[in-house]
Length: 472
Ligand SMILES: Cc1ncc(COP(=O)(O)O)c(C=O)c1O
Image (cartoon, rainbow, N blue to C red; front, side, top):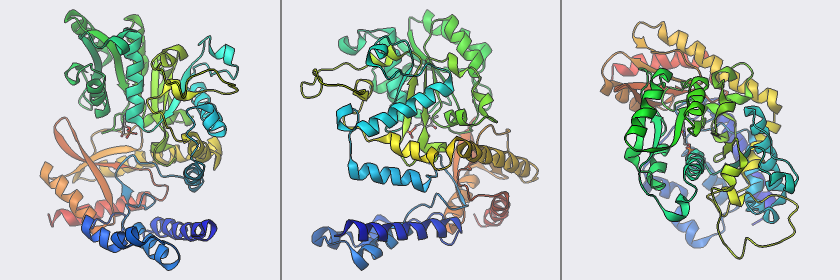
């Protein structure tokens, strides 16, 4: 095995892959059975014999890439999985080779320093004080804090654990006395109820906030929900707003909800896994107005910030809340030492943690902040044009004006027919859509995230939907 020869082979194959994906020369999605893929990849023989290089490596890569879902294809319109910039992907590669588990500073100073830099960039955008370099100043906790995590679900869990400890500092050690609750709209991501289960709050104690027909929190109903929960004897751990909702891509009115939370001394958490990225857009960030009044925020760089999976950020306004969320003993890690940097380990669920900051930094470094803003704006603006086009078709329905790059729509016919259309599109391989329900009704759902997608592709999609609808 030669690192440079094999590496060149891999890069050449990936270069070709990107080009044929962007040019739609291969299907956007292609699903064989597990057994067939095992055979095509020759897994058993390679596992037995090793020696995966030269022509064998070429054949392996070719089969592997032919069985991927192509995110760079113009017909990729399905999920909020980032369209990684190639430079950011090289960041994941560098991380794979160096493998610096950087939650302890001495185990990866460069990776930790970049994470520190990226967290501060995000804090500044929210309007929260950046973490100082100086250790003594950091210990005053008179600033914000944050950490990059392996995904938004983990970031949400860390945020809610931080909020729970804030409400009851002894809970982590002494366990749950009961009576805790989270207030969130039913449209919130399922990682919230998963977290409530994990944290001992109880999934049933995620209490729904009243929403409009599109799943947005109605601020004038929030106080009633708070009073109801408190009258029933619950301690409210946090109130959660979506920025934006996974299903529809619509934003809750953050500013109004923040004021209510402050008035009632409730931890306000904003789930910005998808839409927190709009902090990078001058044109669209107004939908996040009031965000600086929140207590915590998560955002996934691996959704709209062209960063390879996974890289999420949890940010808190007050550093002490996060720092005090995790305090453990481990003689091999926590002891006196020369400490020129910062150990993120006191703020994370993970012990071994990848250097997630590099891929994130490189995603932005490739085009700078302006280039990133242009990418975000172009996805959202195109979604607006797509909405206008689809809404003008007599046989289609698009029930709301999009605020992000997510759009739900329906073709005429039953709920079952929407799913049958989706399945048929996937089999044909030119377009890949997802689907969700709004108010009990089934919709097709698109996430415009590939820079290759144009309005002409969507016009072709509409034409194809009409064609396949006759066959399902
Ligand atoms: C609003 C919201 N929160 C949380 C998550 C979970 O993030 P992850 O998939 O990175 O765990 C998602 C993912 O789609 C999301 O849309």
